[in-house]
Structures are given as C-alpha cells and as structure tokens.
Amino acid sequence: MTDAFELDVRPILRNGGEPFGAIMGAVNALAPGQSLKLFATFRPDPLFTVMAAKGFGYEATRLDDGDWEVVFVPNAQSEGAPTSRPEDPDSWADPSHYLDCTEMDPPEPMVQILAKLESMSEGEVMFALLGREPVFLFPELQARGHAWAGDFDAEGTAYRLMVRAGPRS
Image 1 (cartoon, rainbow, N blue to C red):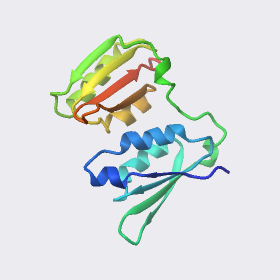
Image 2 (image 1 turned 135 degrees about the horizontal axis):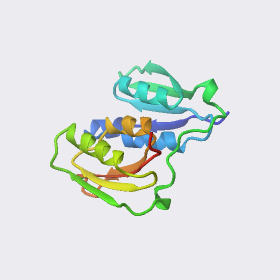
Image 3 (image 1 turned 180 degrees about the vertical axis):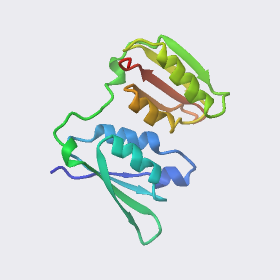
Image 4 (image 1 turned 30 degrees about the vertical axis):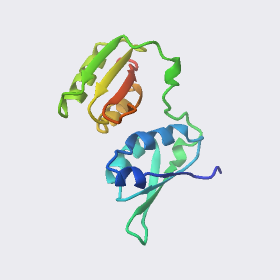
C-alpha cells in the first residue's frame, strides 16, 4: 500500500484562509488506494460528507495540543474503481462564458454559476471571478458531474474559478 499523503492546513487556517481548495487538490493528486492524512485546527465535520461522496472513510483523532489529525482512507469498494479526478484544466477549451461575482453576497454566486451551467453544453468552460473561495459550491459541482479548477489571484483578493460543464442529466 502507498504511504498516506500528508497535508497540514493549520497554517492556512491560522492565517484566516480557507483550505478546501488545497484539500481537494491533494485528494485529486492521490494515487489509487492512497490515504490522505490531514492536520487541522478543528474537527472538520463538513469535510466528512464531501470525502464520503468521493469514496473515503475517515478516522479522526484529537491531538494533545487540541488540533486534529484525520486520516481519510479509500473505502474498500472504491479501491480499484476509477476515481473521480478532474481532467487537466490545461487541456480544456478556452472559456466561452464569463461571470463576475465579486460584488455578490453568498449564496448568489453559487446560484448564478449553477444556473449558467444548466444552459451550457458538455465540455464548455466558464470562468467566474468571485470575492471569496466558494467552498459550498464545490460539492454541488461534484454532484452534478462538472470539473473545476480555481485559486486566488496573486493579491489574494479574488478567487478565479474555471468550470468545465459535465454531461447534462
């Protein structure tokens, strides 16, 4: 078995950041059957549902200093099965749809992005600019079969998100 990939998001959390993008990036980079060992400043209960949808169970342990270590392990039934990994965004077509959501308050950016995706054909790409990382949007995109890639701009003031439309249901 492959060694667990270790990700320590405590520095991100202590600096007021949102580590969801880093966590999903690590998950998408895991080898088949590989576990993720996550270190956080709190028990990340909302992440358990997201990871369960990706085929992972977990074991959470409170550390002596009050922080948490969570080991996400692929479920036995998911090992050997194809994993859900976003394609390489460098291979995507150029965006054909653009949304500026920087002045919108939640949940409006999520509503706008999901509504636009409903009108897009499979494989079309949207670029959205947001005022914050859309952590609650990611599980919705995953559930609908869309791929995404995103990060903060160099100044850390805007979140850039590209979404590749998945198959229409």
